[in-house]
Amino acid sequence: MARITSRSEALAVMAVMAAAVFGMASAATYNVGEPGGSWDLQTNYGNWVSSKSFHPGDQIVFKYSPQLHDVLEVNKADYDSCSTSNPIATHNSGNDAIALTSPGTRYFICGFPNHCTGGMKLQISILPGATSLAPAGAPKANSPLPPSTPFSTATKATATGFGLAAVMLAAALMA
Ligand code: CU1
Image (cartoon, rainbow, N blue to C red; front, side, top):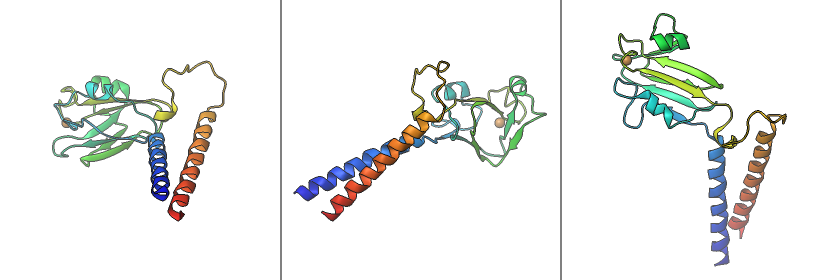
């Protein structure tokens, strides 16, 4: 009886630690327009982005028929005017994963005639920091702390938690 209890306790600890670590990793993949849409003429991309926050390490994936659409990454002026003449990058595989590597704003439009003006334009604001390491409401401009501090603290806490969970699991399995 004691064995079962301690093993299930260890497994519970492992599950909690795994959840914490996965949450902390926070590299998310967003399929553009999903659920309910894709890279198409029906989706309202302003609505789509409004419920999300993007961070370095995340990626967005454009899924579409290459016969019907493509994806041009453009600058803000070309985004605003739906100009396709000077793209930063062109994607047309129909399954295009775009890595969001650094903070800033990136602009995507469809290059097919009248599709951008028809609504196929997507503006992505990439916020600094990993999702779960940026406390909501934390003041941004008041601190001279080195930026690495919260990350190394979190990493140590995670490593400690993992070690503890592994020891407990091993103890439970050997009991
Ligand atoms: Cu299109």
